[in-house]
Length: 239
Image (cartoon, rainbow, N blue to C red; front, side, top):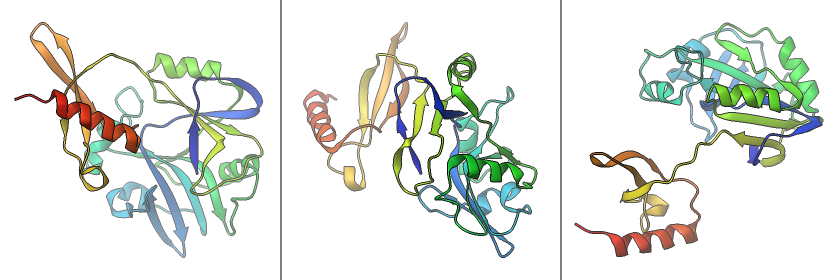
């Protein structure tokens, strides 16, 4: 189940709020004594995170959560987690669980509150923590997100069911974005479905020593925009 983007924090007694974790989405299944981890795309990640998969979980459960790496200040760091994606075992990870979608039988059609109550009653091993929920008013937790430069919030409608594969309005994600006006200094060639357009725009900022590269961006473009931007890039490209 996926969240719908939402522009700003809000107050509503029919909703609860959680931190948005900057990590890798993970479904954990414990069936017949075997624990498996799968990514949002369905890829098997079991062997990559043995400190999570090689533990004892309640039988016949499927958990939904996020694998995160914490920095020295205790904040989720996707940059640290990238080391584990390269199969490095030097960075410890934690599994933050926020939903229980199977426990002996499917729980997907149960209201959010019942799933979360059942999740809280599970005897989970070390290395797993249950995400804390904050009711009604997102402003206090949003202040915490802003002060600590965390990724954002997720709002969930009370009474909502779990809808696999759906980007549902019952879940809203509120990102803690920073904006900057940058220079497009170059681009990477696209592959696959983007072979005729581009992969990512290479961005820079002007400084005392000229144009300094600050990162790249390749998401958020629909097909029409990809073609239009590539046409503009071809017109502006120089040696």
